[in-house]
Length: 448
Image (cartoon, rainbow, N blue to C red; front, side, top):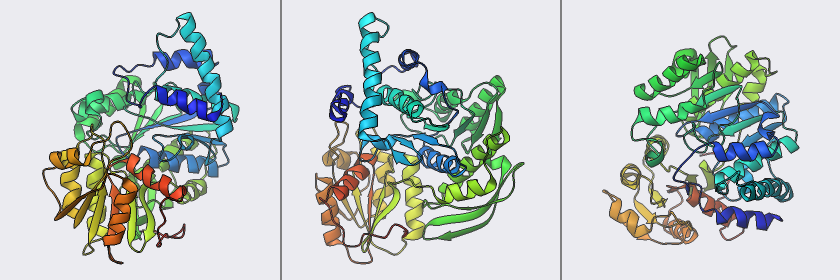
């Protein structure tokens, strides 16, 4: 198959949450048929409600800086599916994607024909098997895995990771993971393996106790950021932070985080602590590699500035916890500036709580809709929102909604595009394809 045919087959399986029953049987069967590519390199796995991707990006950058040929598997993508599968910061090429995906699909056909598989893999299982296959072919020396959802039954959870991390536990995907923090934590703690090291920044007491319990049962070492990390000399510039970090038993580090938001402090601490645990296991990761790796990390679409005048910032903020962090950031950075919000959401998200957090920030809200089957209509959002802004505009096309917001904005105004990573992806795609041009586009080094 060529690249386009691979994407068509992938799309035919429906969206990533198509499955109503999750297990590891399908991915295990496919990987066994492929010769167990996931066992050909050491791995780290990162679970959590928010911050997984940023933490993975920082840890992968650390490993690459330390000299390891590093694979990175993340989700979702913003513009192209290739973004999810990277080696040393470079997304998989169309040709390599087609070759790896074709190898997976041929095994799937054989397994289905012989009855070894009752049904084809899901969208996410296909991609995960493709990633494992490509990393083996690309001779990756270490692979960092971001859990797609939950942990225990996520398709990424098929390796014996050298280290596992759980960033935080908040209420999200409750129809799949559980209704309480403890139930969701139980699923995320499924990435913990017997005798392995674990690092967590989880703060919720009930969730943290579930992680502790899992570690006790499996004899896994647990490092809790709030117990083992010391933060000093915190400084902020342009929404980005630098500080001194000491993790129990490690040298002091001076970390400079290029990713905006105070919440990135804890994500960086998790990545640095994970690197420390790997170094203790014999991986050659120096303190300088940790510092440089974090400073060089990139993670687009999260508090990403795409224009300076007016200031336009993209952020997913697709669950209540992320919305609260975004609101705190906005209050700290943009106080006194008029804000316009371009907002879209999926139907299955907590629109009531997210809109209650974000809409009061805005002088004007532009409701739009992503070209995704799960997307809520602007009317759906308006009906479910318990609060509104002084002005609400409905514009179904995301690019047109942003352009309208720009037309109405003054030079000192802020335009925030948030509510869904699909919305962020739609805007970034329009920019890359030349359908959206912004006069105030920043230089790469410029920040909020």
